[in-house]
Length: 181
Image (cartoon, rainbow, N blue to C red):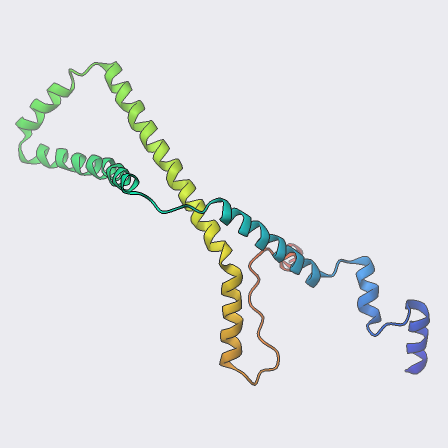
């Protein structure tokens, strides 16, 4: 065994872990690469979170938000009310529909454009608000993983090796395994 060890030291140099050092010449150290990736993701998430932080909302903003919440429920309840009125009093409903049929077509187009722009802008605003909440949640991931480690260490203090916390980002080793399957 000593002769083989001496030959390996001559070929690969004096190192305690010859195979690891040799393998790192041909393949990136996956653990070090994952650590760098997590650090990069944490830095990017922190930057995004700092960009999307908002200050407290004033009374005017809260009132406008409350008024903006009214059109969709009113449209839905109004439509249900029309169906109900058609069943309860068909004559009354038919009279109202005759009045609506007198509305000129350009006015219908204008109403459609107003409603489309309102709901489109609302959808965009809500989508951006959702993205902000996702970024803020992702900024808390490192704290959550530290909490998991602490809880696992507390659950079994005699265990010398803490259980690994699941990785939050993509795992190239698993992706390679899935592709090869």
